[in-house]
Image (tube, rainbow, N blue to C red):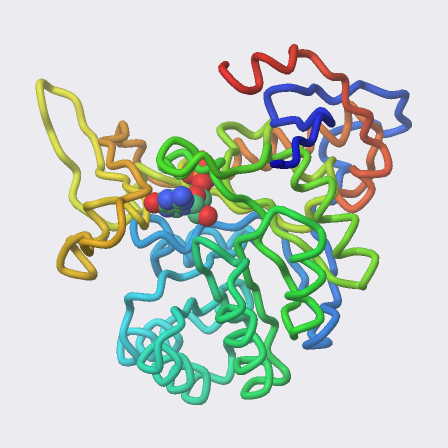
Amino acid sequence: MPNINYEIKLDFKDVMLRPKRSTLKSRSDVNLFREITFRNSKQVYNGIPVMASNMDTVGTFEMAQALSKHGLFTCIHKYYNVEQWKKFASENPKSLPHVAASSGMTDADFEKLSQILTSIPGITFICLDVANGYSQHFVEYVRKVRAAFPKHTIIAGNVVTGEMVEELILSGADLIKVGIGPGSMCTTRLKTGVGYPQLSAVLECADAAHGLGGHIISDGGCTCAGDVAKAFGAGADFVMAGGMFSGHDQCEGEVIERNGKKFKLFYGMSSETAMQKHAGGVADYRTSEGKTVEVPYRGDVEPTVLDILGGLRSACTYTGAAKLKELPKRATFIRCTQQLNTIFG
Ligand code: 5GP
């Protein structure tokens, strides 16, 4: 008999943050910077823990330059070669504390990652990212990378349940990427039926990670600054977004003009577009689990960053949190939808 879990599980849209009495005089009093010491690497991070995804359209060097100026982070996509990395590092040394080098799981990926990390000592973060972080093969890869790079901070995912968060942390990861199916370009829930409502995933995974001294990233599903605030309120240490950073000058790809309107191409990393670009097509045994869309062109990313940070400061002010770190302690969520809306809405 299959198990059915009848507990209510929630997405960002199913809740709102309740306002609370506050002694804060102004939004400008709110401190969005966090100092985080990672469990396994023992490295200390100081920045605003909002990240651009390691998608090839969004996780670019240009994005890292723009975001790091404000203390935000970029997981750089895995398709740059070592020479491109070296050029970026020599021209942008101040951005390096705010980037991660991403890697796949093949021997060639490992070799390239090793070359990047040994030739650029300023990179302290590694992002190991697979669609399904539940495979034993992935756990073993995390162990291998931890053994090879004992002092680097390892980001690993994606998972959505506490026991797998614990497994990855105990295998050497520091920051666990949480989210299966919530992404704006993701079709996993439609193609496979697999997924987990994101707010509940964050609440449960943060609890599991923090119990071990680890940390989590809420990855995917944020459509606005309010969703980012909800993810932090639910206990995320970092929030990663792709769609919110898409369509800007700093994204890879040309501006497309049609009928007087401007667009940029944005696509999932498991979309047919990405697989054609990086793997020569969709392999026979699999299906694409990502969409391709033309998103409106939005110019420089700077106003978008300021909008996200303004929204976060305001959320902290409404809930009485003087620092972003205090938001989970101040957060009370009001459920505002029926469960049926969560499934079909
Ligand atoms: P967004 O912020 O756009 O809602 O979600 C971004 C996240 O979606 C990424 O960080 C990544 O975890 C996930 N993602 C990116 N591309 C794909 C894809 O093609 N398929 C799936 N299932 N998830 C994707």
